Length: 328
Image 1: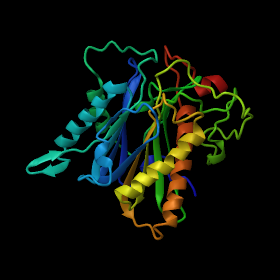
Image 2: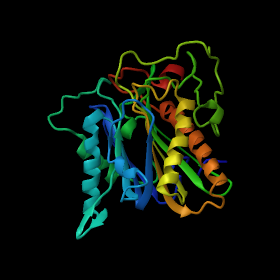
Image 3: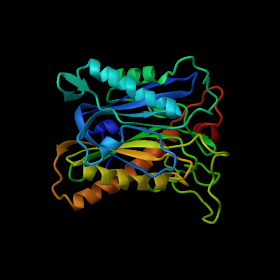
Image 4: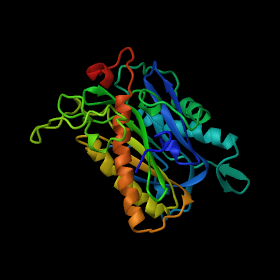
């Protein structure tokens, strides 16, 4: 396996990512947009999720494809971001056809970033506007770290961020990950700079520091107090998958979250992963290729999580330092 040309989720052909943020509020929105509708699924393993239109992603539901997926800050307020994306898509003529109407299908998930030092005294919820702005900004190249849904994110002891990574399998299938890292737990080992995701790093993409020392009997490091958590992600591929197969891909990808964040999937996190499949490539072996696809998704997500924290940039009023400020 090797990274794609950009080492971003947009190495999956036909997908674009748009980001918008408000650095005064310390929050933002990220949108994954398909050139055409794509198969999508979801799996939740955290105890405190916040979602929009995820029920329709079950394999037995009428709608089998979506136009976009949204990751947003803002807790429940951030669910409004998907409304802005839907408005923008409708203006483009996109959406599920119902008679002479088009209804854009835009599932979304949110993280809690309301206690991160930003100005939250808005007179009007900013997320609908941020969603539409993120959609308008969609392209194949984007920054990591303090951008989009990762703008106000934090982890135990450090600033979080938006991460992405990709991998191309030996059979030519591409897998990519996009993640807003806002975990209760830690992404680094002990008091050192090494990332839990180190065994899966490619080409020193988050420092090439290798594994650090840790005490397996020690209590995991976490943020102090409840709330202010949740890591939300998208795993994408150009493989042809049914909604049921995409659901299994999302399930497998959660292994990557557990490898990169300790602890993960806690009762105080709303950890969630969407899966997206454009269907451009058939799997030659539906059984064993699907196994490889799940493993690639997990390792790709672990790398993306570390990259998001590694790339975070400092800003006035941050409650935690960045990885770069702490470890240089």
